[in-house]
Length: 433
Image (cartoon, rainbow, N blue to C red; front, side, top):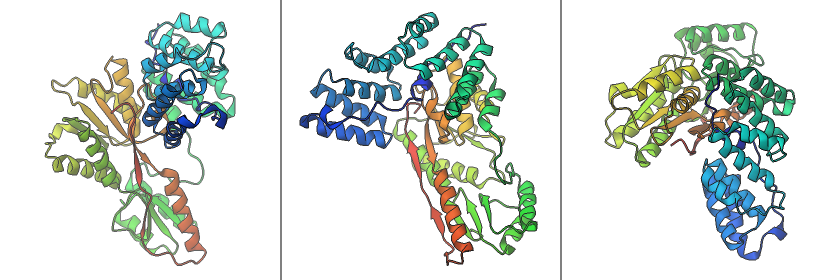
């Protein structure tokens, strides 16, 4: 059976920016706007980039390089109407036609004109081989041929450099037809390296730590500060470095590297309040045995109460761990069927937020028009969703790097003070809220 195809913004965000501009492309009067635009691009601020590129374009109408960059910045924001208007300015003879074709492709897919988009690709009016193949995968899905869509995405994945992008699209396709379990399996990946996975169970964590101690590990790095009494005793008596990560609390056993989950949740809540949302629901992972979830919950409540906003008990929802795309989709459906649904939902884990987004799209709900959605984690898929996700970005690589650095320094015999390393966090504002 044919499916209502997802809008094609995921295709666009797989692209890099247009080629860097050489000095001769920019006149002296454009330098300020251009440099401001490039700085915004480097910072990932597409909203500012769109403004500055359009300012530069107003001073130099018809400049193909500025047209291409302005198209891309607006497309990254999901402003397809504006991107289309700017695409009309592109000279017919310019090499930027592939970007123009991309805008037309997205418009065709959004309008359900699958035949027209396929015809354009076959006529050589596509956005380039890679993007054309991704588009064809979505077209096959829209025509109800999940088998051929899967084959197309898997064929792209045979190029190892493109495998992550291709499998992300395959996961989106499976979620679009309601196969949340299949999507979750793709996104969860496989365990790599000598990791002990506790699945938020203090008993499982105790067994993993006991195993590492028995194997005479040189150091132990754990996630969070929630441990059973038995596990805490093992860690306190361990002879090597112990690093607790992904949160900041005063009761560290030895060393700690992370960020304040409390302040991160409070900051996102304040942002939603400043945007004018009044009825904000919070969805988090189960708070038991999870100090990160508990601190995010506390940060949300603190910000709401500081603003004088009531938080009805029914607007604080815990979902079982591990949180999944499927659980987020089901919960969002339930929330939006309430007589008085929230106007914003802050998911304090990213996978259920992604599921919520897909559920809204499948039910014809506008994000953020009918309901705003914010996540927590900034997984790679979040920037590729049809409406890019506003979220809290966790500096996970920095957590791992700093934890490894202080562990190795301690093992080399260097004096490392018992102090928390705060790597901070970022609010990533996109179109969903």
